[in-house]
Image (tube, rainbow, N blue to C red):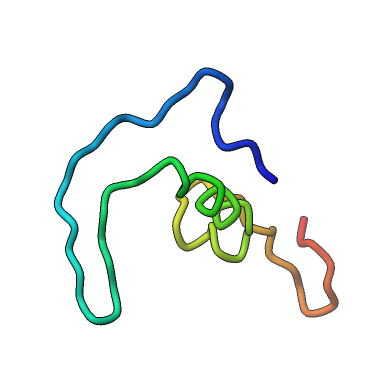
Length: 68
């Protein structure tokens, strides 16, 4: 399992509305969300759509070589 936070760090307590539809629930973050979110952002194929700092693979030519 991925460690949830740096030792001693805590999530801010946020009280906010809960919005529900038939297919979606929007609610404030909870501590139990950290592991799943960290796993999602650790996947480069997913993180590239979410995190602006996600590293992308360098472009490759048709033969698979990385251009100079």
